[in-house]
Amino acid sequence: MSALISGTSVAHSEECPSLPVTTASHAICLAKRFVENKKPQWAVSYETKETTDHWLVYYHPASSNVRGGAGDLKIEKSPGTVKLIRGYK
Image (cartoon, rainbow, N blue to C red):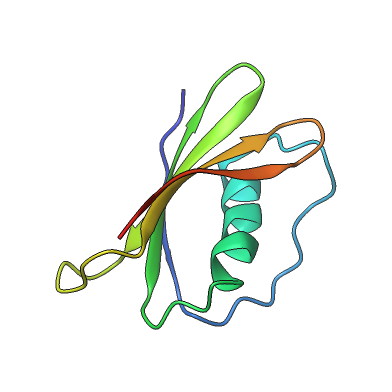
């Protein structure tokens, strides 16, 4: 199991590697694409946890002064499907 925390700005233009999703940084790349479609107004941090067939990615505001805007994502390793498990308002 690995854990990685990474901050990002609102603008995300990097290309994600091809499938399957084999690293935490690849899972975060896909999570950034998902989150940025919601157009957050603040910097977002990501934490990952690997399981046998998917990655769990928790995203949240980088600042403790911001309430809400967090959620849990499930990213399937093979197809790269991103699913919102739970959103926090």
